[in-house]
Amino acid sequence: MNKEYYETVEKIKFELEKIRPKLIMDGGNIEFINYKDGILKVRFLGECAHCELSHITLKYAIEKTLIEKIPEIKKVLQVKMSVV
Image 1 (cartoon, helix red, strand yellow):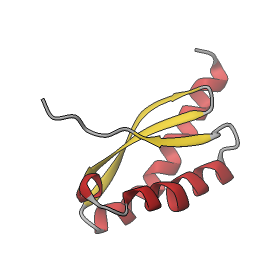
Image 2: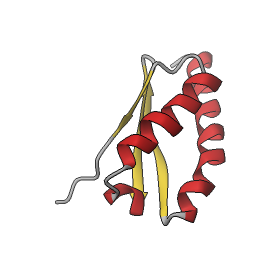
Image 3: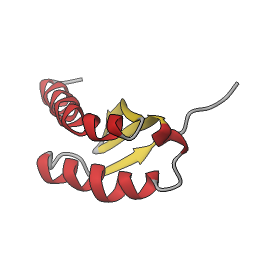
């Protein structure tokens, strides 16, 4: 991983911290999972993980905001929690 990668990841984490309080107010949260080749993977936690509207939050709030602020991001994907 190069310097640009780590700088982008730091920007992503910084922006996620600004989004997080809104999700926490609704009983949820968001977790950074991975960033590679312009694709950011996140996981919703708490109430957000089970919300039927989480895909809308992901697309029109989180992805839109992050792509505007961090042009290196091309797409944001949700990783679902698995139950073992």
